[in-house]
Image (cartoon, rainbow, N blue to C red; front, side, top):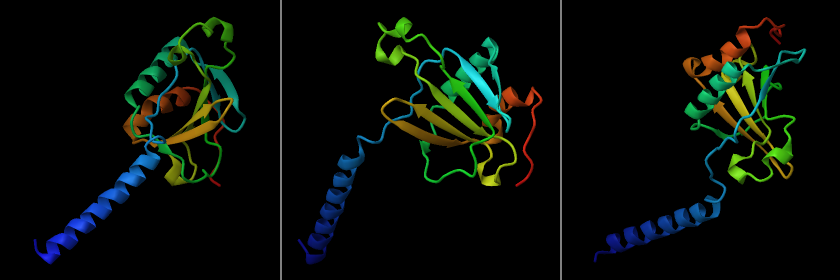
Amino acid sequence: MRKQNIILTLVLIVCLTIVMIIWLSVRDKIQPVTFPPIVNAELVVGPLHKKRSLTPSELESVKKWIKSNLKGWGPLHQNPPSTGDVEIQFNRDLDKNYYINKPEHEKPHPFTLVLWLGISQADWNNKIFYEIINESESKIFVKDCNDSAFDPLRKLVDQYDYERTDFP
């Protein structure tokens, strides 16, 4: 074997070893985003935090949107400019005794989708945060949507009149 081939082989082995070490150290942290079962939801809109429960058809629409948007979620890398324009709060005020005998993947847990749909800083519009509310920890994932993917959620809010914030 020539000297260049030996050096190239050694460099390749070192690179692959480094990649394997990194992969083995982070693979436990890389998990797909999963959503718990949805029982109920409440929409919290605008600066005055007007609340209303979602109708059964709206709840089905949100469930369908979630099923079709399981991919593309990533960790939050920077703080947003505000708390968002709309929150959809899921599975609040449930009777935990009703679900006590169900398997863990069938138990509904509280979580929130926070939507940016108005005139926040332009780079935050059409973004959705998925906030997992847990006793032990909380996690936040973010998804950036194009207009057509975001429209079903925007329609939940736009069909009702609420006070919008002005430009900062």
